[in-house]
Every structure is written in C-alpha cells, then in structure tokens.
Length: 277
Image (cartoon, rainbow, N blue to C red; front, side, top):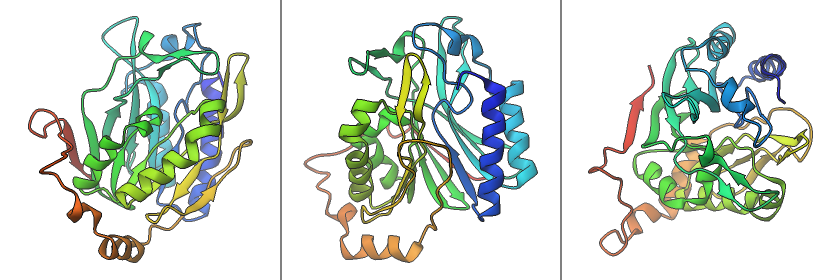
C-alpha cells in the first residue's frame, strides 16, 4: 500500500512467520516498502538512500529474526533529484547488506493504462550473482527483467542455482505471461526460480496480478500463493534434484556458444559476483 509504516508492519509479520516455518531466506516483492500512485510522484518523494532510516529498519528486522532477506525493489534515492533507482537489496541474517542490484530493464509499456518506469527511474548497469548464501548461489533480478532470458542464461553460467524475481506484475500481462515466463526461465536455466509478487488492488491506479511462485529446476510449480491476500510460500532447495536435472540433460554443455553466444559487457565485468559475508 501507499504507507511505509503499514508495509513494514506487514513485512514484520511475514518475516516472523517465515522464521517460524524454518526459512533461511525470505524474498519480499517489488515495491515492498511503498507502492505509490502512477504519475503522482509520491514514490519518488518517498525514495531514500540504502543507508537511510527505512531500509535500516528492515536490516534490523533481519538481524533480530536471524534470517536473510531479499528486498526488491526498494525505491533508492539517486543523485538526480527527479529520478531514483529500483534496487533489489540482499541482506544477511546479521543485518548487513551483502549486495544490491539496480533493475536493468525498465517497464515502459502500453498495457493496463500504460506505465513509463523510465520517467522516474535510472537503469542499472550490471547484473548480480551472490554466492554461498544459505540457499545457494542466487541470481538477483527484478520483475520486467523476466522477459530477457539472456540475463538468466548469464547468471546460470556464472553459477546460479536459485533465481530471484520479486515483482509487481500488471493484471493483464500477468494473466497472459507470468506463469509461462517463470517456468521457462526455470526450465532454460535448470534453476529454482522464486518470484515474490504483489497482489490485488493497491490504489485507484495500481493493481497487481499476484500468484507468488516457486518453480523447481524441472519447471514444476511447487508453490503458488494465488491472486489475492498476503502470505508466504516455502520450498526446500534440493541439491540432488538440481544435480539430477543438470546431469541427465546437460544443456549448459550443449550450448553452441561458437554460433550463438550470450555476451556480458566490458569483458564480463558487467556481471558482478559477490560472496556472502
């Protein structure tokens, strides 16, 4: 909703429930801390630096509950007063920021009343893999990135076994594409895909499709939270399943990179690999 304190209280409840169920990492959806009304500029006004008081409260929450948090995307203030970053932040169980990723692909489309994210948001400049977290090596992405499979291929090649896609998908695009895109990314990369999702009506100009999903490396949906309401879904990351799928169908080895190659810019430097702290 359009209330940072109410959202923090809701996230606190979700974190406590995740810990109760034994989760090592909880992913919260895009705009978890504040939604905003398109065209009004309130989200931009609410933007803060990662060192600011709002994100600090989420860091304190992670530390108090002893759980890793995937917080994406957060409205991060930028040096440009009329623009911000859409930033996916990974926080460890000690409350430290392990790494942050600024959304590469901005949502400028003409569906559900139209949306132009680039009007207030600066594009990110690098992809991100975080190694050796409690759930493995995680590829960090956000929402509209989902439509660009080359990003996920690059993350798999860098060592990802879990791909995070926190989102606020629009209702019509979600109905048409959400499930198939997430399953496709899981099947193509042979990774687990976890997609936290906003759901339902937020304000008079904004609604989200919902259906937070977890998909396994074979493309099976192992969790779907539906179109309405708030809750968490839990899945165990099974290393034996990962190994079996990748061994029996070694698509990474079969890739014809001499014919078609996914190229990361600046000789690979645009994909940052960060170890867990």
